[in-house]
Length: 288
Picture 1: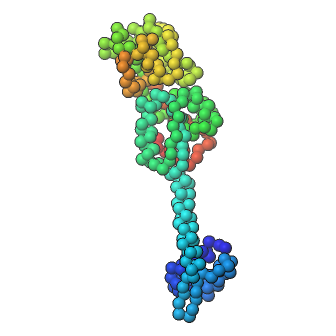
Picture 2: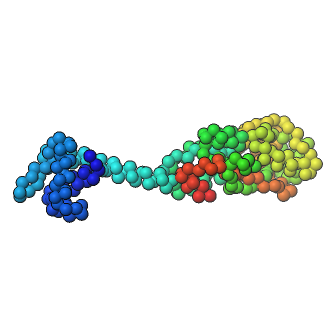
Picture 3: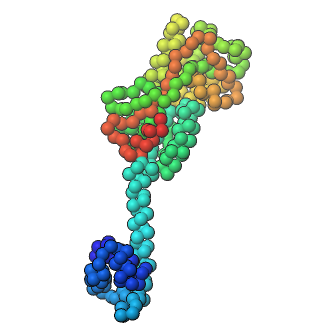
């Protein structure tokens, strides 16, 4: 049984006239009659009552018609979904992001994705840069938003956001009432930092920034997440140099201040595996 046999049957069932059905199908009437007879022989039951004056569906033919029409609707849906998948309009994308991205670029990512690829499901994972690189290697995420630099031999990357550095200090700190804070005034302060291996690019940039005015930060405490760093500042454990957008994280007991000095720019890069781009990921990358 071929699909065309079912199409012939549905057309004849709609027309109940061999001549009109043959005309719609762009074939001659005798071949149509022959194909319907072959279908009935294969099925083992009659589909039509035929007389010289009219053609009628049998009871079995009526039931068969309902099911065949359902099959064609399912086929049309399958074709439609297949085309959507082939164009990257439907599917799933697994995304990693550093915690600070939630305060700058992540909301725009989600909004733009909903507008451009609304039928693509996004699965989000908050991960450090170091964790994202491991997950990319394992195929557990499709794309990441990390603190560069990254290995250009293994990954494709694109800078998607840049910002300055600011200082987070306890609200009762002597410097908290100043409009801007000089980096030199922090020489004797204790700093809260994240371990270097988590995001060496950002870590080295902060250290280099301090060394430009003649000191290396004195470590009071390490913390993995930016939210934890800010919480430790609120607890008066120390001060922290953080990306500018982190001031969107309002925490009682903490104030954010800009530096007198011009700060280096810190970036967020979008990265993905080289030579491993699905159609869905390709559509996602087009957004940026």
